[in-house]
Length: 306
Length: 292
Image (cartoon, rainbow over all chains, first blue to last red; front, top):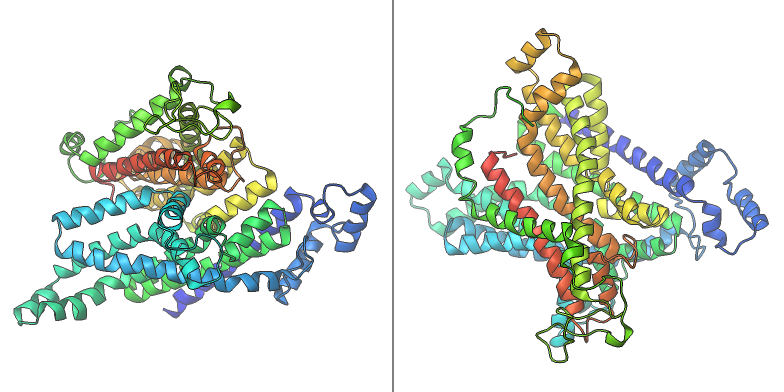
């Protein structure tokens, strides 16, 4: 297990390094960062001065080394637009996105687990078929469209919920449903499949034969085992949500990291974009690492493979 | 693919083939997708109007089932007075062309990488696996948006970016499948007959690992459709005046409070296209027995 942990961590480090190179090259080679700072109306002399001031005239390797050194000190650079430290700008936006992601996950699991269990208990019944249909349909709905429809229904027609901003908890309900409904189908299918498999296992039959109550069997033995693989998928889905939050936050103007990413992209604020891609990738990597470790802990066969 | 080399996938193909017509989901999916592809191909013949022609006197006319609908404009008009039905018909071209194009690119990259890693093993496999893990760690939507915002949005850029991003599952599946088959007898006999590695990979192995790859292709096609729509919706993808369904949603969202059809209709198109591809994929998975 320790060897596995070591190999996976080494790989994760390599991946972080690779991603930092990708984002750096994209933001320094694909565009002229000097134009980004000075704006389109800058003269050639302005641009030259900025290049010297920011070190863009240095060889790319030197610039990258400087960037890595800054990164190691926790310095993510300054926004081209506001001049504020990128780290501070992003930190201000983290709580809203974290809250949104947690609520979305809560919503997704809150539907996926009970529905998956019910569908498994009544496999091939009308309830099961309805749950599967819901999953197929849910997976095909583009989440930004779902967001707009929710705004129309609950925000405009019924007037129950706020549709824009992130001032109160109520502001997060519609965005969380939008984001969560995208993760729900995959989780629900996994709970259902896991429950069906576990319910046929010998130890459940034994528990039944010993006269244990159905409720006790269900919650104490079956669910606990069926939910284990769901944990690793949940970690992965959580990562997807962070990526998907950019779309959902833009629709609902939630003042989170995703909305910040979209604003920065619309205005070519490279240091912020670069930092957000790196940050979310790193969270992604940690979550995947966690999922792999959880799987390895559960299944010894995986440990020897990676 | 008219390869006649022995099929190593277990089970009887004859029995599976019978079930194609009986698989309801597959038939529904194939039917809807087929209809959308036909609409895309014959768009100039079907569309009642020029999708770019603006008629400012006829702005935001509702579809035929509403009061005040304009005769000749079956699904109404958008904020610039363009015929909505015609724009949706032409929009099918963008989604269909983009999703097929993107999986061609990503399939080529992913299958090549995966098969090479699986066949050669050793340090080649280690290097390619690291590449796959790097790609899996990139948040696709975010990276696609960042690249498109840097390079500038256009249909070609969106196609390339999505194609260059969605190869990971092809590679993962091709790698595992190739690993399983590389010691099969027919591969050994081809080697003994002096076949080149290229021949073994493309003519012997590829046809035999194609079933799970076709299923991956459907999943990635649906992804490509949704990512293009999301990019265009955020204003960073396909640019106006092209009638991309995602872009139509974006243009419509400012008018949706009084003219809700401008967002419901293109969204329904996206929904049905994605649904049909997913149903087709689920069906193929059952029919081809390509469980992963």
